[in-house]
Image 1 (tube, rainbow, N blue to C red):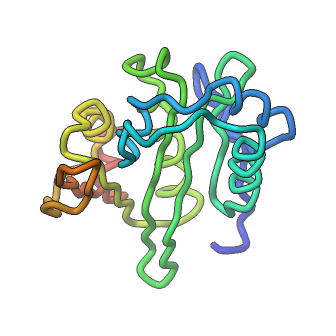
Image 2 (image 1 turned 180 degrees about the vertical axis):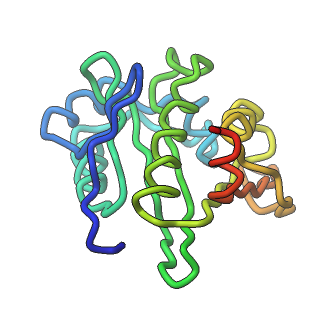
Length: 184
């Protein structure tokens, strides 16, 4: 399955696609929200304004992701989603999602993006398992993962130091047969 090309994925409200040059301006306009950066595990007190160079580096990083997509909503880049740490022998991968627009949180767009990638990964790509991790305080992300069938499998205690506080990571998994059964 490694020879399969990464498709552009379409949902009701999103296009998951390769990065393009205009994404730099979109990324720069989104800036670095302290609330969003905290959900990624950064100390909000350490978040600095996003520079042009950092926006360019973000887009360049997206271009290098073999199984990564920029998330487009209403004609502009609003984040990214990617499969990483692929293990072809065991037919599994990890999933990472990052929405960068605070105004779009809580609207179901993350669920929509994850469902599209899960459908591709557990279907045409031929994987059997997807794994995700979310900071335990990120209830919104955990609910979104669970909506498409991810099951909590454990907790990695005190795995993230944010500022001067330790936080747990919740580990979740999705199996192809479970995903297919929910969609039937």
